[in-house]
Structure formats: structure tokens, C-alpha cells
Image (cartoon, rainbow, N blue to C red; front, top):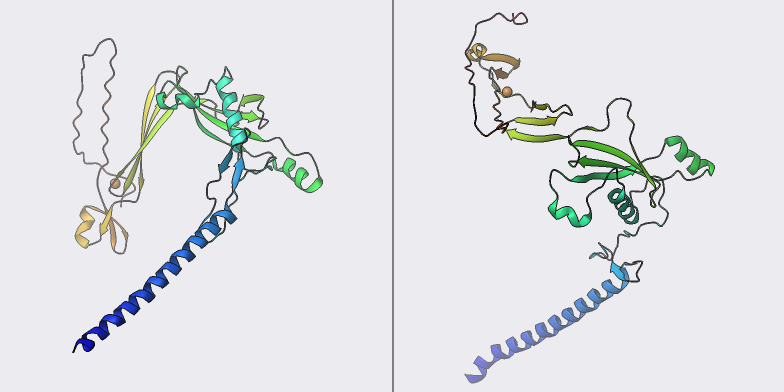
Length: 281
Ligand SMILES: [Cu+2]
């Protein structure tokens, strides 16, 4: 009776022992694989002061790696390098015509700041690139386009500059466009999504002091399923689609304090008016 009850107990002990050995083996294998990955795929950049900095994306579970190191002499189409961006930023900060905010000032920026909104590569003329790539000509100078939000100017404007040569920038010029002015008025845009419409609202600050409000309704027309009775209330667009008549009315409140804070207001009442529209038959 005693030996009968002991047999299953021994079987469990043997099974547990085997499983334990397998688990330890898997753990050792995992440690070996993980340590091998780190040693074979690590990418490191040595900075100018001799420090080793690990590259972003230095390794992944496949053992592959993405080399994010930048060339010392980038080609005509290579994005701005870190060195180019840093030197350009220093130039923009020190140029008395631009006075861009410093990196340390970012936390305290406001609408009166000279803010570097965008910096990007300015691609050289195609003829110069072809001469360089196909005919052994000189490499075109690398230049950057800089868009500045000049809240420090009165009135505020947006300027576009072209700066070069990279990386050791010596000059920035206001870009010269044939089809529009530069600089242009500072414009503030917001987009409201209501139902199936996207309402684009622009507040444009003209250089003569005028504040213009512009509102555009974009997106898809508000439609519904066509039935004969809908003819009274809209227009049939497709076999099963009708667009019903409706209005888009916008109300903007401006509270300007000119010579004091007292207010006055005017109301407009909207009423329906019957009229004949020539293009409706
Ligand atoms: Cu509508």
C-alpha cells in the first residue's frame, strides 16, 4: 500500500528535476545571446572632446544596425548635419539683423521673440549639381534656408533667409522671390474640425496695422440620402445623394482696449429674403 502511493511522487520529482535543468540551460543561452548582441552591433561616435556617445538605434533584436553617423563632407542633397545646424544657429544668434533666440532662451520665448521656426537644406541649382556629379566640377556650396518669426519687429513679420556656406556660415541674405514679397506679415492660422468640415481661420497682421480675419470652409459637403421630398430643401447631387440648404455663419469677438477698457457693441439681425437666382431653373 505504501509503495503504491510513493510511485507517483517519484515521477513528479524526476519531471521537476528535468524541467529545472532545461530552464537553467535556457537562461544561460539567453545571457550568452544578449551579451553577444551588445558587443557586435554597438555604434559609437567620438565627440570632439574625446567622449564616446552611443548612437541612437545602435542595435536591435535582429542583430542588424542602422548607421546614423554623418559624413564629414556631405554631398549636395544630404540633410543638414548636426555640425552645420549648430554653427548656423550660432551665426543666426549673433547676426545683428536676425538676433535669433538662443537655445537657452527657448523656455522663455514669447510672441516678441526672434524665433527660428524652420531650418532646411537649400538645394543648389541642378546645373551645378550635374557639373559636380557627372563632369568632375567643383562641389556646389551647401546653403540653408531659414524661416524666422520676427516677433521682435514692429509690426511682426515672417522672414526667409538663405545662409551659407555651410558649415562655417559667413553670410545670410533675405531671399528674393519674383512672385511674392519677403518678408510677409505674420499670420496666425488655426483649423477647427466641426462635423465634416475643416474651418481654416487666419488672423493676418498687415504692416499698415490692419488685422484681417479670413475664414475658409473646406472638407466634404454635408449631404444626406435623396428622397423626392428633399427637393424642397436642397439639390440632388447624385442618384441617391442630396445636399440640403444650410448656412455657415461665423461669429468672432474682438475685445480691443483702445483709449480705455469700456466697450460698445452693435447687433445685426438676419432675416430671410425671397429672391430669384438666375442659375436655378
Ligand atoms: Cu455646409
